[in-house]
Length: 497
Image (cartoon, rainbow, N blue to C red; front, side, top):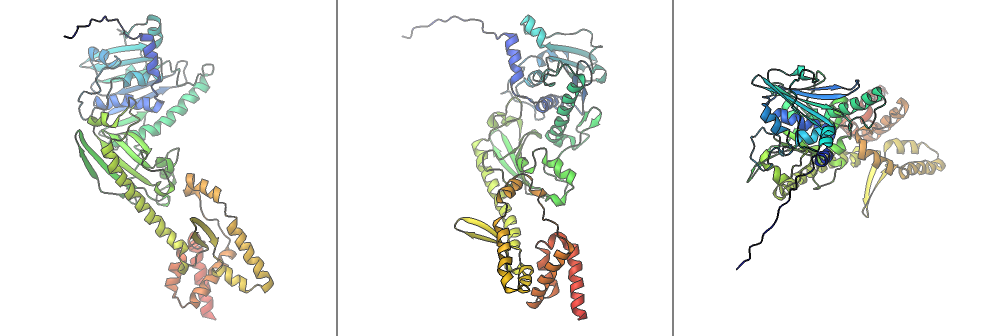
């Protein structure tokens, strides 16, 4: 017979002052914090969201105003309660929330005073969390102002909607309090950095202005499509669907255009501050909202070979637990069944990239095309050597006295042996598109063109074939207009003779 045990209970309610301060350090940045507030607005059916910043005043503030359905006072009080919802509960498809922590933890990560004013059914309600007040009273109690007229930004509210106001921006100002100008500079710089994040994270909403408009200080934010789908040179693979117990995962691969196929402004915009190398990989969307990007989830390394490859993954909010979506909605983990499918996607991407590079590289080392450099692979090593059989070299060497030829070829060999491998590797790993062939003067180009023409004509190749061969290799490819002109002038001279 089991003996019945008794136990006592003790009140373990967390201290308000301690726990609410702890909510500040979940790990939000300004951009993820504002994104979390916008998530609430989207869930509330907002069609327009305005972000208003006042940095050049004694008490800087950030206000986020939407025209969503708003909240009654009891709904507002519930929304201000930390952990106001169960993350395991089933949610509507457009619902971008999960834990019921976002509004509070995102706001507290940036400010010490959070005010929310909401209007619904003709009634306006307001609630305030002030961390200094909580620290003094150590109570889980929000303030409920009766008069909202003096609250900054409240005049921006329409018939329905919600205002989220951040004041006492202690985290955002970097500890600067003595200089209003310096503090404003810091805030404005962080807001500018946040702008790109918002354009990217919510691009699938703002691409349709009837669906959503986000304005920063009155200026609409342009959507930033990471797949450049409007560019005709973008390659889109067919969409794949993976049906799982809790919903469907959509997967689609894209290959971005070469940097010469888009404007420099668009190329830099789509690359972001860290460049294309760091922006490749999977782009995970939850409810069309971008959660995570620029990662291969440890399935392969970021490389120059795949830097133009980006893969869209769409999951419904019913899969949050499977993907371990965090409070900030900025990290996730791959479920094993999805990991296996994505491995195959990566293999396909890598095979395609290798074929492209090998095809391009073959033109470089094909002896029929008379390259300036030869690629020599042996003993597990790859070397690049100047091609001393190139007409530009051999033609000049034949005109040299025999005692000078050896010295000339030694100089060519020295150039090859001095190839700056480490510097090239570092540049290719970061900014490959900025590496271009050096310009050569007219006399040097003319000498190379004439020598190459002489050899190819001597090999009984017709002029169309010669032009096709020369157009694919440098230095002719990089200066093709001048090369064509020199070819025409050289042939004309030969015909006159």
